[in-house]
Amino acid sequence: MKRKKKADKNEEPVMTEQDVQAQDTDANSTDADDADAQEQTIDKDAEIAEAKDKYLRLYSEFDNFRKRTARERLDLINSAGREIMEDLLPVLDDFERAIETSKDAKDVASVIEGVQLVQTKMINILQAKGLKAYESKEQEFDADFHEAITRIPAPDPKLSGKVVDVIETGYMLHDKVLRYAKVVVGE
Image 1 (spheres, rainbow, N blue to C red):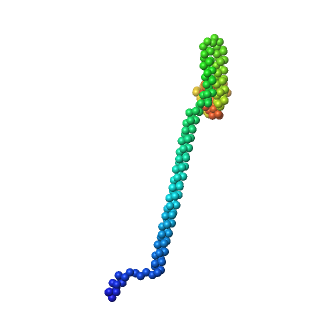
Image 2: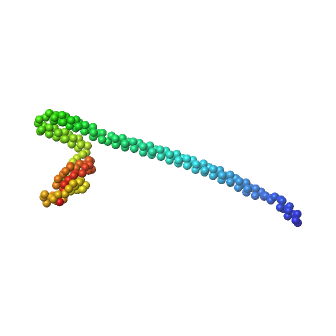
Image 3: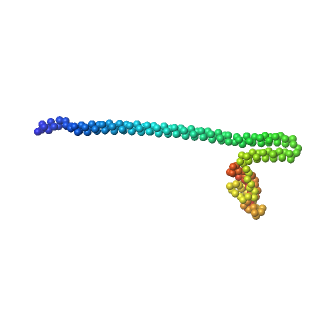
């Protein structure tokens, strides 16, 4: 009996036909699973590559847009005052002519009249660009339009809390305050 046990141990297990088919099916399904996994990996790699490409293109496009707008903004800032400067050059020329003629002038009234004409020309140019002065005298004090320099006793009780005197005229550019009117307010 002892010999039989030893012989059984040395014998290889006998495989049935079903065992062989199951083993082949497992091998085939493993190969198919490996092929599917490789295919999915390739698809994922392609998707990742495509997403990276889209990202890089979008990033480059945005970077170009940012640089272009920065360059345009800088150009706009550098040339923003060009139009107004070109319009004011004739006024500067008129001032030069007024100074030249006033040196030899004996009639002060004609010099004053010439300076007033130049002032009117300049005001017209600035108004055409959207600048306008606003009236402040005897108006209610409004911190949105006025800057109080000082307060004095009101010469008339009706002027209490109102603008008594204007030191500097206030100006608006396209309905926004460009310079606040410096005023004296009555108490």
